[in-house]
Image 1 (tube, rainbow, N blue to C red):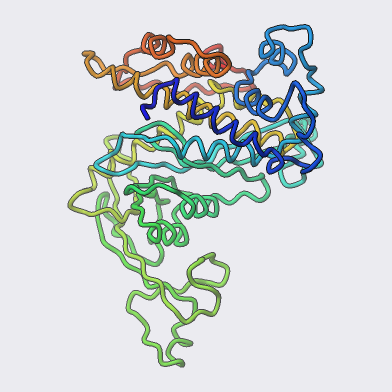
Image 2 (tube, one colour):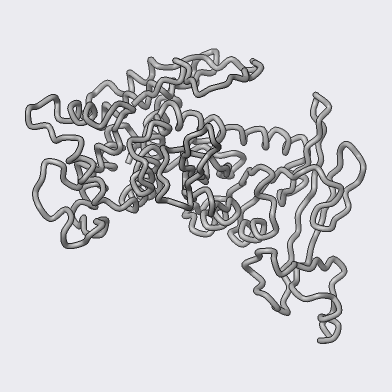
Length: 435
């Protein structure tokens, strides 16, 4: 099926209707919730959560019901959405995202980036795992960490996991997303310094994924002494084990030359405590020098002939795409404008925002493909695309692709501006939410 906006809307609504046939799976109280016929039924609640703007709940309801006299109240909407488990929006996000067929690749690989984004909400002290009390002159707030996998070439999110502030673990989230991924094509994963752990490397290699991870500047990496040169590319291998060399020798087990003992505190899912087995890892440690004099060190299992150091430098620069996508999520899709402080309801809005992001990006694929004939490379105005796609979901119209085609602007490469440092919580007019 061609991925036009009309077909994408049809696909999404069919998945909503399919879920609506058995809403008890996603009800907080099965057998009681979503059993009576109401104006705000299961399907209507899902669509409202997807297309809600940053305005108040009452104003969103008036727009959704076209200012009719019998428009449901904000209280009725809140009562209905409390009956809905966050798993409903999570399953809808995964089913829709997995149904997309992205075509862009980097040298035959799906290019993914992983990172985390913090999300603050109003104070809700009852949720101790996410609550931060603040100082004497501060109000408290709740904080969540959103871990996400982002397709850099196609501009969509493939997976996400939301963790509370006091139980956050980026490495654990990466391993879980890697293990459950349905991507069948070859993958290159780009990640920052927080993800360079042996457990993460083992999960990635066990999944068959390639990776480029940035390392902290140290003299050694996992016991491998690094040269004191501004640039180098050295191979390294480790044979991981849980027992000490003395314990291995007493059991007449030969100790490998590249043996690296895992401490009991180190998490490594493939070798349980007191295991006599080994796990072998091989990778490259590459240090590159940039034009500004700074150096960066990378850990990768890519082939040296196909991906020399200069190629790795350009490849890792693409990771910044996930940072700009977080900015679009917060401001264009209005993720920072939450309509609740209850954790379960926050999760509903998080998955709804990510789904709308993917819908707008997928709707723009055909528009971007038709831009290759212009002299200067152009890109879509994503904020306008989100606004148009939300309106299209509420009520379809014919000219969406043509409208998106008109909402393009040239990409001016080579521009560099110093990031302004501002105090306070002011949001520039440039970041007004699109929904």
